[in-house]
Length: 91
Image 1 (cartoon, one colour):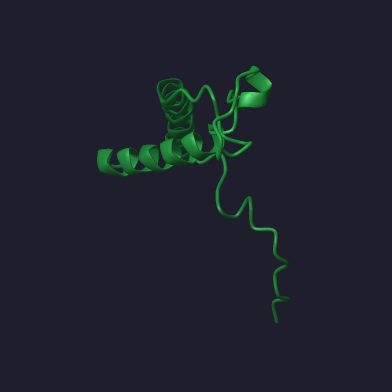
Image 2 (tube, rainbow, N blue to C red; image 1 turned 45 degrees about the vertical axis):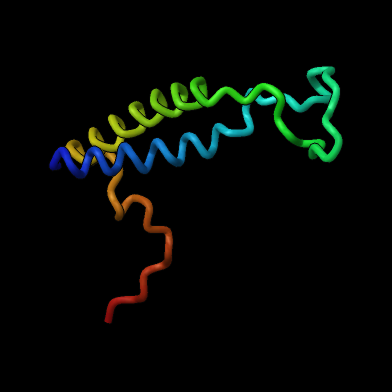
């Protein structure tokens, strides 16, 4: 596998990880016990930390990319393993 392919896969895993981790560790103003600003949405986060989110996404994307590359090299799970559709009868 080429290094550019690995970098593209890492980027895709990073974006997916960051998106999936957005709701974790974020508290609303009501949960934090702080006053809200008039017009503020009830679900608006009070303590959003993009650095921590990026660090978590970086670590999880690195692990997922390593697993993907190892699976590509060693063939642990192939497309035939996850093909669950019934096969048509052979004549």
